[in-house]
Length: 151
Image 1 (cartoon, rainbow, N blue to C red):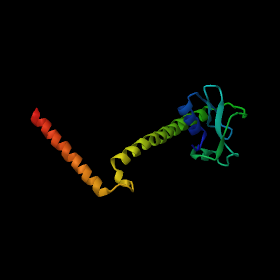
Image 2: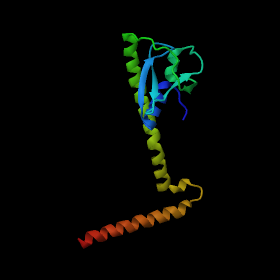
Image 3: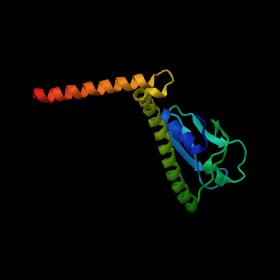
Image 4: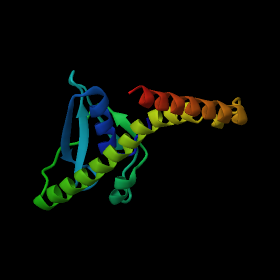
């Protein structure tokens, strides 16, 4: 999976492998940087390849790599940065949940649709499928009426 920012990477890892989320001040600007620590103590995080020209653009994603060490000194955060960072983490976390939920629901839904509507497949004869479905529903209706007469 391609990651676009540190929060999405850390949430993906947390969702798949468990472990812990860690926060520290970003080296590029004053909002939190999110790191993931696995259950066995391996620290990983997604960081940009080069210094960001416009750090605000990191909210929309950047090219980067997963690193296993955190060599940057963690500086203290001011209250304003903590407040802004909390709001950003909540908003972007909500985006991650929505995006991941759609992906998780999309796959089974599409499998179900392929089963229910196989005429989208090139090998299915659409006319024959329509006749088969018409006969199936006619039989189901007859069986339902018969069950009402028996009662």
